[in-house]
Length: 250
Image 1 (tube, rainbow, N blue to C red):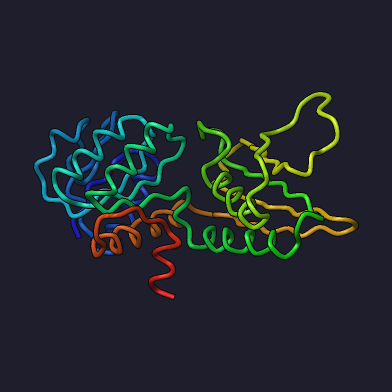
Image 2: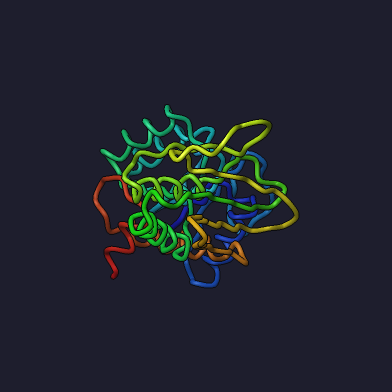
């Protein structure tokens, strides 16, 4: 499998490159707005890439998603999109591209997090409206977006479990009044070198149910990216996520 790695010189890009080395997978080229020495050529634009590619793994920021999708469509290869904070316009571009190529998009590539997503949906279904749901996510002090894409993914699953009638409320400040039953509270913590922690709390009358996941290393996400990339090379055009991958192997 030949991989083009977007965001190659960032933290996650380096972790994916290391995971590829350990697995004997070839990174033929990388793309990064600030190139630095890597064991493969790194370009500032997809237009410069001449090397072969079977799939793109993208850990770069949301900007310039059009260029990445255009490259994949021209090469007729899939893309694993692990970035977050995409605009509605970006999401529309991704959906349009999925008509022509396989696109794997997820807010989190950890198998454990995706299991958590299934569990919180089931918890909301069982516990019902007698419980209030609050989500706390914690990340390192260099993370630029808040809340995390994973927190939003978990909130969506919680809402589905409750029947789809909830709305996200991001943090609280000042005299906000009593908590509305329609709320799913989402709170972001930033500090130190926290890789990623997500906690979903269901608070009811005299009891609390808490489900959580903690990533201790970014290699968790790198391994997930490679697993997704290998699976994607066998899929037809379409939009996929980690649930699709897990269902195919369970």
